[in-house]
Image (cartoon, rainbow, N blue to C red; front, side, top):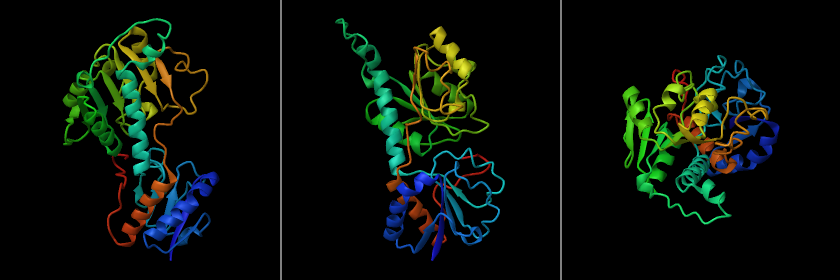
Amino acid sequence: MIKVQFAARPERWESYQAPLKAAFSQAGLQVDLRQDHPAAEVDYVIYAPNSDLQDFTSYTACKAVLSLWAGVEKITGNTTLTQPLCRMVDPGLTAGMVEWVTGHVLRYHLDLDRSLNTQDRWDPVVPPLAQERPVTLLGLGALGTACATTLAQLGFPVTGWSRSAKSIAGITCEHGDEGFQNALQQAQILILLLPETAATENTLNAETLAMLPKGARIINPGRGPLIDDAALLAALDSGQIAHATLDVFRQEPLPMDHPFWPHPRITVTPHIAAETRPLTAAQMIAKNIHRGESSRPFLNQVNRQLGY
């Protein structure tokens, strides 16, 4: 019997218990799923970084910690976690991100905000076709690649940037410092889907914001610290950046006195771009446990040196 501990907020247990048991059964796994196994007997931990479990020292038999979150920046620095750590990449989370990003790209592309604010007058302004609207994504992991591919299928010229070289059909792939500048210079709409690491903090700052075409628009469903808040506000006030839609922030919930709330060129959404869905997440967890029990490499295992 495989002993699996569910370590997340108590309210999550109710929504995950049935999907997990169903996924384990479908995968042919004999699992004893609980919230309170003795630590030394646990084979796998299903984990949310905001749970009460923060010390993994006693989990001496644990084969892997399987995170329910795509982001792992809140756990990679935990020195007691020496087991393999896998982040969540599941079809439901990916689909949610693709839909959210595509919706806001089309909102910008079609200038829907302007259209909705001209209901009292006849003011026809015809948007360009998608093929005339270059879009850049910073970050070509699973989520970035899925978003880039969908936007390219809609006709947008899509450039993607990643730390290391990649090749994706239909996408102009850049990497490295020179490629980063090229990617920014193309972007009428810029999407940030980088992980949060020491190397990515303030990716958008005064210098890099100035590399974007004047009037560019920014969409950030990635991580709050990717953007220097003060530099973004200055770029918006100067007109260098026309608008920013932000779903993630350095502090969440975003404090009500934060200058992002009243700014006329900022749209705030409450970290809703991509949420882990219990049904599809459970299937991914079962798949990874099956791989572990079959002595195969885990999917989406975190590289501790890179931080993602």
